[in-house]
Image (cartoon, rainbow, N blue to C red):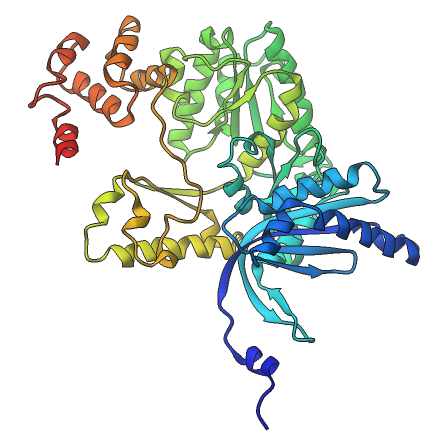
Length: 506
C-alpha cells in the first residue's frame, strides 16, 4: 500500500522562507459568554476579509491564514513588507465604530516553514510566527506592536517612519528578550506603554541593598545637561526627568548638587559615572560655554571608558548648524528632535530604547569593486546568510549585527542567484544629493575650509552630489586651496574631478 499524499508531504524536508506576519487576538476573549465569543470572532473575520492587504494577498496566493480561536495569524509571503501593517490599520478602522471588544496586534518578519497540520491543511511553523505571537503577547488592548526586525523594514517608508516609536525590550517565553517598537499615529495604535513593559522596568530597575536605600542597576544612570532660563528647554527637561525616573533611571541634573560641593569636580565625577548623557540643544543652549564644557567632558570620558557615557543628543525645536566646539562632538551622532509637548512621548520612548541597545555596525563602501571578481557570489551569499540568521533569530548573536553595504550600480543585475543576494533584502536607502545644511555640517567636519559666504557657490558648482562634495572638500583641505582655485580647475581634464569624467565617458 502506498503512502498517502499527506504522509509524503510530511516526510519532505520543509524549506525555510521569509514571511511577514500579523498576529492578532481579542483581549479578554475567555471571559466572554459563548454566544458573544462567536459574534466577536465573526466580526473580526469580516473586518480582516474586507481589508485590501488580505484581498490582494489572497488573489496572489501569497497568504496563509491560521485561526487561533480568539484571533488569527496572517502570514504574508510576497515582497510587500507593508501588507501586515496596512491590514492592521484597515482592520482597526473597520472595527472602530462598532466593535465592543479590545484587539491587540503583533508584527514580525522572520523565517517560517510550510507544514501540514493534523488534517493535512497547510499551516506554518518556525521562529517567524512564534516571535510574532510573543510580540503580540506584550501588547494591551489597542496596541499595534512591531518587532525591531520588522520595524527596520517599515522605517524605509516616509509615511510610516514617524509613527514607529521604540519602547525597549521585553522578556517573553523561555527567557527570550524581544526589542519592541510601538506603532501609534494618533488614530490607530495606542500611545501608552504596554503594562508588561512598565511593570517589568520598575521591577528590574530597583533593588533593595542591605542599608534599605534603593539602588539603580548598572546601565541606568543618565545625566541631563541644558541651559537654565530657557522656557522650552526647561519644559522638556522636566518631562524627561519625570518620565525617565518613572522608568527606573537614576537622573542627574546640576540643580541636584548639594551646597558646599566643589561644583566643577562634582560635575566631572557625575558625567564620568553616567551611562548616558542627554544634552538638550536649543539655539540658546548651544551658545553656552558651560554646555560646551560639559559636552567636552562627556566626550573625553567616553574615549577613555570604552564609549561610556553614551551621548544621546536631543534637538529642541531647532535643526540649524552647531558651533564648532559642539559640532565636532555631536554632528556624527543621530539625534532626537523635540518640537513641542506633542513630541514628548516619542522622545521619552526613544531614549530608553537607545540606552538598552548594544550593536555592531559593519559598513562596506564601494562594494561595486566586488562585482567583477570570481568570488563575488560566495561573498554576497555570506552577507545574505548573516542577514537570514538575524531575521530568523533576532535575539541571537546575529541580531546585534547591522550591515551597511554601499554601492553605485544596479547590484541585482550582477548577482545571478537572487536567493544568495544581500541586495534584495533589508532596508534600501537611496543616497540623495546633500542639502545646504548637510554641506555646511560636512564642511565643519573637514575643519571649515569653506567660509560662510562660500557654501552657496560651492553648492552651485557641484549640486550637492555626495561624491563630488566629498572630493571637493578633500581637495581644499589636502592642497590648502581656496574655493576660487578649485573652481578654476574643476572642469579641466586633469582637474580634481577627472576620475568621474573618465568613468562617465567610458
